[in-house]
Amino acid sequence: MAVIYGWLAFPKLWKRTLVIASAFPLAVMGNLVRMLTIVIASELCGPAAGSYVHDGGPLGIISLLPYVPAVAGLLLLGHWLRDRPPELVLGLQPKTT
Image 1: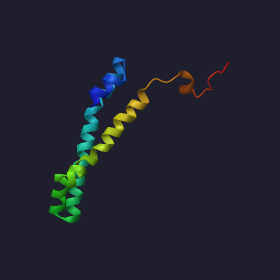
Image 2: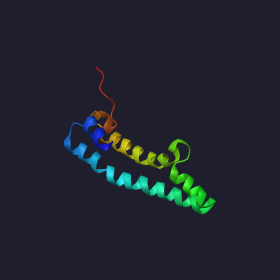
Image 3: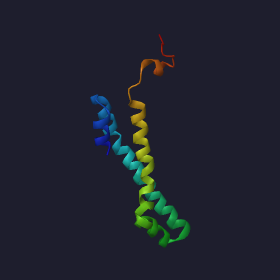
Image 4: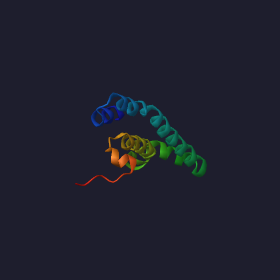
């Protein structure tokens, strides 16, 4: 997903490379959150709850929720990298003539 997003959204090579390189740490973070939710559910409510969270619950939705921060991080990085007019970067008012 990061490769496609980086390739389509950014014409500059360094921005594409940064977006693609960010995929690995964001994926690790998403998997860490997923494993923590399984362990916490298992510790609080028993092994059946941990297994339920691991299997994804109804339609597999629970197992996908921990990846939301990773996708949000990718989109946030893309927001920071987008090209903006210099007036907006410096906080100046654009000239109207």
